[in-house]
Length: 114
Image (cartoon, rainbow, N blue to C red; front, side):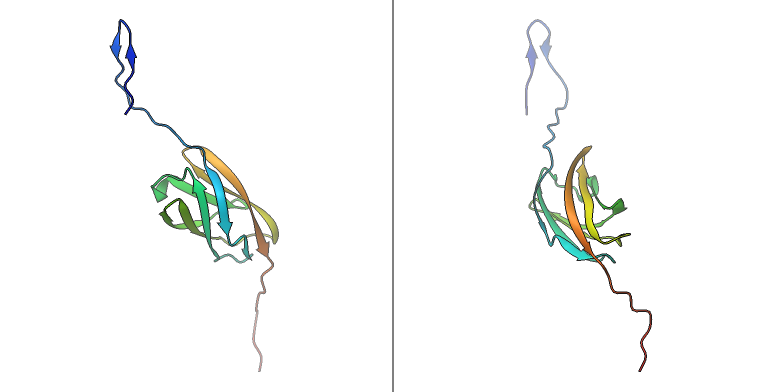
C-alpha cells in the first residue's frame, strides 16, 4: 500500500495500480504445423495472474489459452493462412509484447487408396 499525504490538504484516498510491462523471456517450441494445434509455452514477466486478462494472436488469429502459472502461459496455436515466419503478440492490460513463430507447411491428406 502507498500512502500519499498532501500538506495542507490531507491524505489521498484512491486505488493505485502499477502495471509491469510484458517482457517475453522464452517461447517453446518456436515452430509447429501451419494447421495449428501445437501447444506452446510462453514465459514472460508481467503476465499477471488472471488467464482471462490475456490474449494471444498469431498472424491475426486468436490462440486458445489453456493455463497460466508461475509466469508461464500455455496456449494452442490456431490454424494459420500461410507457412513461414508468423508475427505473434501477447497482450494484457493494454500492453503488448511481440514474438515470432514459424509455421511449417502442413500435409493435407485428401484420401487413402489400397
